[in-house]
Amino acid sequence: MSIAHRLQPASRLPAEAAFEELPLGSILPSGWLKDQLVIQSKGFTGRLPRYWDHLGPDSGWLGGPGEKWERGPYYIDGLLPLAYLLQDEALLAEARPWIEWTLSSQQPDGQFGPADEDDWWPRMVMVKALIQYAEATEDERVVPFLLNFFRYKAAHIEERPLRDWGKARGGEAILSLQWLYRRTGEDFLLELASTIHAQTEDWTGLFSDFPYWRYQTKFDHRIHVVNVAMGLKEPALYSLLSNREEHREASRKGIEALMRYHGQLHGMFSGDEWLAGTHPSQGVELCAVVEYMYTLEHLVRIFGDGWYGDILERVAYNALPATISADWTSHQYVQQVNQIKCTKEHRNWTENRDDANMFGLEPNFGCCTANMHQGWPKFAARLWLGTPDEGVALVAYAPCTVKTEVAGGVDATFEVRTEYPFRDAVEIEVRPSRACRFPLKLRMPAWCSRPQVRVNGAAVALDIVSGFATIERQWAPGDRVTVSLPMEVTLEKRANGAVGVTRGPLVYALPLPERWSRRSGNLPFADWEIVPASGAAWNFGLAVDGKSGVFSVEEAEVREQPYSAEQAPVRLKARAKRVAQWREEMNSAGELPLSPVVSAEAEEEIVLVPYASAKLRIAEFPVTKE
Image (cartoon, rainbow, N blue to C red):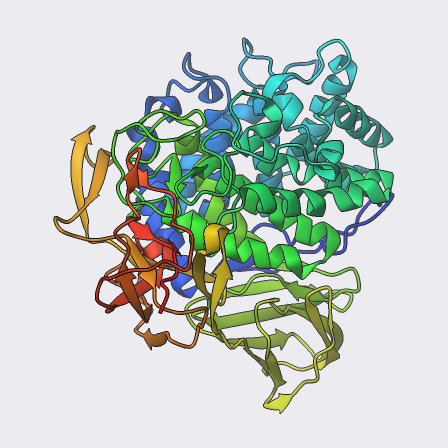
């Protein structure tokens, strides 16, 4: 793992971001996070093209007559960072033909990609993949290629403006244009970015005065959950060009409104295609999960605010692994917070089909099958960011090794040893190539009331600004930073007086014993229904009377796949009663009765596990009356 040089920009944006990304390959995962990426590589991501025609040799993005729109670009956008993070030759060989065909497809006028599909949208995705490739390899072909393409786009964008999905997702192009401008200083790139902003849905206006308060019943691109997840970063990105407060504020206002009217316990807002309210049996699409993670990664980069990092961890450590099987051979289109069965039956979705919460190859629709791969890799690649004062910022806690430059060009390695989020201790070994002074910023989660940091055993006084504590000192090889983030069991209030149980960034759920039945398709990527074992009850109310101290915490070894009920490394024991009036409705857990509820049932002990460890679960509970 060599040191990747940090960018010395050719030109600066009108308003620079608070932090800067480190080139792909600067951060390599270790520990449990690397295990997740290896499992991913052995499951869908490493083998999918051999089992799914949309990504096979006939793909239009490999020069074939097959699918020519977004699925090839989606796939390479996740496959490529996974390959470089794992330094896996087989994955690199899988990724190479997609890159080489794309680079060879450019026409004299600058256009590229399948000749008979001219939509701007899939090219936005492929450009993001090419940027990752350029950062990982420093391949000198990419920057001229992108300049030629964007000159073509600038020449044709007025006569062929953004439409449909591209109009909703123009922020993805603005992101790439800013990356290229900082490397080339070509003024036309910023002019094109402004044109694209003008043609994109008015996300700034929407999030500043959010109108969608309820379950949606009619399609509009502005209530499509994936569009919303992507659109949340567009105002923030454009604020780097406009330097206007309305653009700087819109993303946060949008998130706050979405969580107020559509928020779910795992950190996402609902969307079983369209925004669907706060009921814990509404779904959220896997594409939205990975796109929202990517949005949050950029929001924390742009604003330097740990608030976005808190949300990022909540989504990454709960919503992402919950909706993919432990072996990465099946996934859901939508997950439910309260998910009592995954079957082909009609539910109260806004738009999805009956198979949307089954685990399979492409339940409901194939976009998630192509797009899910970016979630863990892009998260791992952005655990740390650079700071403008030649330091580094730890944004999300996970085991990894970081190699970058600090203090004006000093090579430095940071080794993070931790089992977070399953444990609260983090150790960072700091190894600059020589002693030097630079700032180290550590995100201090808002949920932690008593964070502690020590350097070489000595306690550090914490001055937390925008969710980050800064330690600026003379660092020497072998310095050790220990971070303690004590986790307390907390009850989060939900609708109807219900509660969710959290501890640190993890949500906890009652796991139901699972019976998996293959319904269609062939191994390894078959389609499965999951139902609870016969006689298993799910309709429990917590006997907590508003107190979180009634839980006991048991810890076990963090094994290769902590996101399975059998290997859950943390368990919470609680007292509960069955609530007879809480019943199944439309093949899902019904409306939670207004708490506190009266139950004549005997009190019993239940065990909760991390939310994503249970594919059948209850995570939002009524509270019983004493």
